[in-house]
Length: 476
Image 1 (tube, rainbow, N blue to C red):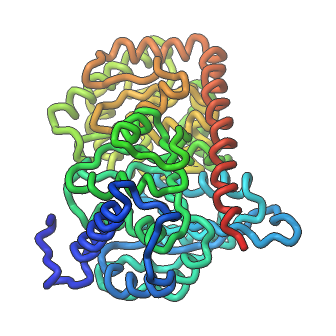
Image 2: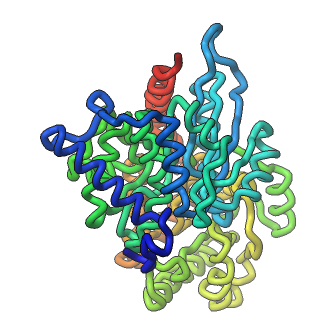
């Protein structure tokens, strides 16, 4: 096991729970003649409350944290019907505008498509920051500490009650339900799967809302794909992930494509954008943005980082000299601010530097959204800035690399494959040509964005209908 922690060091650790889960699955597969476990065949003799308490006492000491919040939709449920209650897991990092934007996106979808819904949000980290952020934007939010801490503290009564009362456990968008993509650390993987295991073991319906699936390295392939088959539905945010799951034999009742929940993000900070454009002498639709992804995130080495940066500097230099317009260097991830300065800004020729605007502080997603909505194009190596820009109606270019994951295939799925580039294999020239094409015929580029978002909106309606139906079926 990674981390070299034994059950003697931590009896409530992930090793115990993982062995228990493997044995539980093996028993069910054997009992069913090799068929995956389904609710109609479940033989668990533990009550839901008994299992929750046992899990809290034994297996919930594993991992770092999250909290809970409640939100009421603006329109109530049908007369005489109790409100639908959905537990959403997880919200992610608070130092990445894309990770933050996923949560308001899923809130908006659920509130618009399930009148009167009440949502319990599980925050993976940064509980205090999320409490403050959500309190001003979703005033009914209540944040609770995670029951999955390494301290071994028992689950709170509030968490157990919220889990017990939820009609559906909904795992939100991301790329975290894989194993072996980053490392083989069971603790890291299990903290994401624990709520799903709890739902499966207590016969609670659960579904996956628009994830990318990268890899199920051994021995996770003995457990995790089968657990996905036990879900009520699994939506993949790119069809490449969809085909990967099918190749593994994952067969829940519903296995379909569904857009990342960040496509539903629509919070704005127009005063910030007004001030920002004035301060930096930017005119609406007369500038592009550039967001990089350096070796700091661990997927590429310094040599590839330098090669990527050289291509992006060439793109910026030629774009500025041909159009005379500005380029805003801005981060999606906080720690990429200084690499942007070092790799892009500082080596540029002086005549080009005069057209560069540099954001030297982290920003919130609604601030980015309002600025993106005023740009001519967003050039980003990070996918969630691409998503937010499309949601704001702005054309995009996505130069990326294979290790960034299957999520890059979102663009071909939306008919925007010509805006996707392999920054390792493609030279700067085709990226520049695409940027100039957007500049020269902006209305045509906007029409392509509108067509892509029409696909998104259609699938949002269809996927939320399945979420709504699944949750409503569980009400008394």
